[in-house]
Length: 478
Image: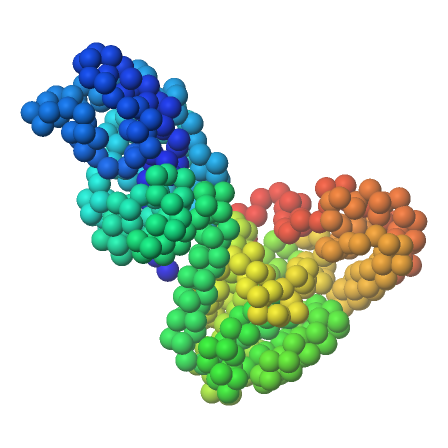
């Protein structure tokens, strides 16, 4: 999907410039001797400066007086201006989604720059001296899909650019009048913008996912039962119909039995075909050796066993649940191996993040929306320590027993891992609960009873990629 660019007006949208503008007009009135109603001036900000100047000075003087005002402005207006509530958070929300921000304003551009620099507002582009339809031209050149403003002229600019017009009722125009003038969205102020943008971007990316799936026609989903592959499976069924979708789950020693059962139940709820496909990643020496590129061998095996099943069922593509966050993680050899084998990644292609997958899953009523991350059992074993069925079974016993005793002890862990570091085990739970788990003797005993000689609790808590931290240099495995 196209990169997100959001445009913002400046005066009374991002900043409350009324005190500063009033101060500049006061100086102008004193210099010229012309009586000016400052309160009236600052109550109708928005149109070009020359429009307001013409209300107080003869037509022949408008150009010269406007030029003088712009000279006065930096010395009297900048320090008296502050950001409006939610402005910084609104700009940050755009950047959080990987987007660009632009200020497109009627203010003289050098003076607008002074405001942005003085207030340290994080803006990627600035275009000034524009009004109404002229703003639309600039927004079009910037490829802005959203424009946020407080005035009717801002709505005109948004319409010219074909952008979503978001009105904020922080300027001279009421929320009712903004709606009546055709604003697509009306907000009380910018404090409401991040939540609106989150929903807007999620809907855009969901639409992109559906378009991508329709383009594929039919898919077999490599379905681990986790939140990502579960959402992809549900989206494929909704978009393509169950007859054009197949859920494939590999059955091996690295998959906990509970995950296998949960995957079967989830697919049954969707009324989609589901097959358990035997796999034997242990047959690969590189997998058993468990060096930094273990996941490459795992995904190679995964694609090797699932691909033929998908083709035999008449499905056009094999898809994985790789999301946009996964692609930003620097060390993911398994993703590269799946791509090399021809797997498609609809969630990644649509730009959907893990948070968006969970939020949309919740909206759809999917049981996996808040399911903790559940990587394969081999991910619990430190690199360089050989992978064996017995070692994986010991980890599974330890984690299963640990969850039971923590529940009995009233310690509500969400994320939990038992890491096999060779000579000892390390428990990872949510960081806020690490101390409580470390002090709870039954928790330590449960791991020891599973077959470990020594156990400790990681004070840093659970985090994805914890085992990668032990790699001296992951670069050779990329």
